[in-house]
Structure formats: C-alpha cells, structure tokens
Image (cartoon, rainbow, N blue to C red):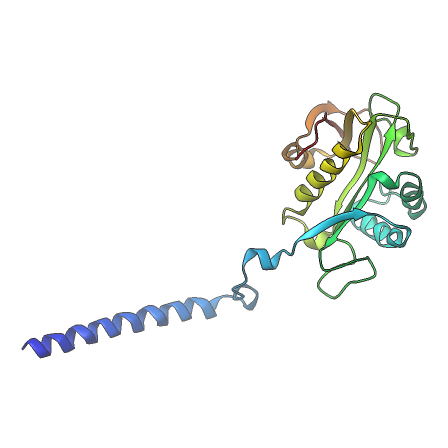
Length: 221
C-alpha cells in the first residue's frame, strides 16, 4: 500500500507539471510573433551618446527635422547648416554608441536618433528674432529643437538626451538662463528635465500656441 501511494503521488506530481508546461506553451504560442521575443529591456534599447554636430550631419538632421515638425515650423536645411557653422558649440546630435558618424547606419538604426540645437541671445527672453540669429556674447541659451526619430520615441531617449545636453551646457560657462518654447502636450516632458512653465508664449511660429519654459543653472542633471 505504501508503494502504491508513492506511485500515485508521483503520478499526480507528473500530471501537475505536464499541465503547467502545457498551459505555459499554449499562452506563449498564442501571442503574436513580435511579442514572443524574450529580450531584456537593455538590449531592446541600446545605449546612445551625444556628440557635436558636423557639416556631414546636416542632411540627416534636416530629414529628421522634417519628420518632426509641420512644414510651416521646421527649419530649412540652410538654417540648420547656419546653426551648425555659427553655433556649433550648442548643436549636438544623438546616436547609438556603436555608430561613430551619421554615415554608419543599418536597417535597424537610423543615421541619427535625435538632436538638440540652440543659439545664444543677448535678450532676457526667447523671442521670434532669437530663432534666426546667434549672439555669442549673450547669456541666454535659446533651445530651438529637441528631436527624437519617430521610430525611437517613448523609450526615454528624449529625457536622457536633453539631460545630458544640459549637463554639457552647465560646463560651457557664460550662460545664466535657458529658455525654450513647446506645445502644450510636451510640457510634462520638459518638466521632467527640470524646466518650469512660465505661461503662453508671445512667439508666433506656425499655427499652434506655444508655451514658454525656463531652467536656470546649475544644469547638473
């Protein structure tokens, strides 16, 4: 009787494990193929870095700008080239660590993940004129574009990119304020990066209402 009870116990245990694994595989293969990949989050989102923009980056930046803004808001390729040439200390691109330049890309990774560009102004606030000129003697950092490629958004890239950018600006010296204008839906993103909402902006650029945001030094994170 003891041996029979042991056999029955082992049989029940085997049946339990068989049911468990059958149920697991049923759930796994009922998922769409894209959801079956058991890839860690870190592998799905490779590390990326900022580097100064170069003239070779301009065509790629212009394409990314056009993907991110309506035609009446996006900067022209000539404007982007001017900013890279005249305000290169404030223009950075963001790309995967494995890529050394925008010329290196594959079917998975675009030439650039994103970019941040600014100019410096002698004004005390960001104005419409500051969108089109750079005054090296100024102390106001005017951030014009914070862009991530559409295929790589909602992965934390924008926050990491802008925080890293502000750390670099903190080390630059000579700046005592930073301003940007954004649309209402993006206010929470910039608040996560330490910017404070000041209110509606008087700047008219395209059809939508813009909002003024500010961040004062130190810009350490």
